[in-house]
Amino acid sequence: MTVRKPIQIKSKSALRNNSAGWRTIAGTRYYFRSRWEYMYAVYLQWQKDQKLIAGWEYEPKTFWFEGIKRGVCSYKPDFRIVKNSGEEYWVEVKGYMDAKSKTKIARFKRFYPQLSLMVIGKEWFERRQIKMPECD
Image 1 (cartoon, helix red, strand yellow):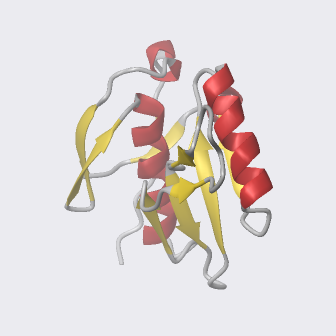
Image 2 (tube, one colour; image 1 turned 30 degrees about the vertical axis):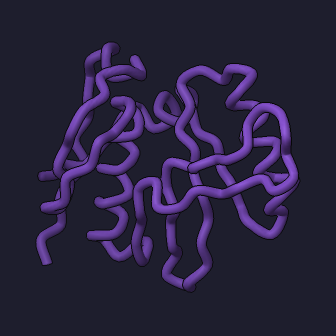
């Protein structure tokens, strides 16, 4: 097993959450809606390669809010992460928290209280000083 060393992205533009597009990670192509989603996916793949997590998926499931007649009726979190223990949690990568996003997250927590959701944003990337692993 080859251990990939994290690299540091020094550019402040890396903190901007734009640049949607197709990217390849570990041989699989994904359409990421933002640079942060891509960077987080690279981080998750590095964790998987290091056996720190069992796996991850990008937008694998849509959660429906039954009985909602107005506004947001569904929500698709960005990532599903499976820990080595088999426990799973969901992650939403947000650059800007608008009213619609707040409603989706609040409804997700209300309709699916048994599931764990973590919302990450600029602060998460700043705390890690954007130390990202190399990836395909």
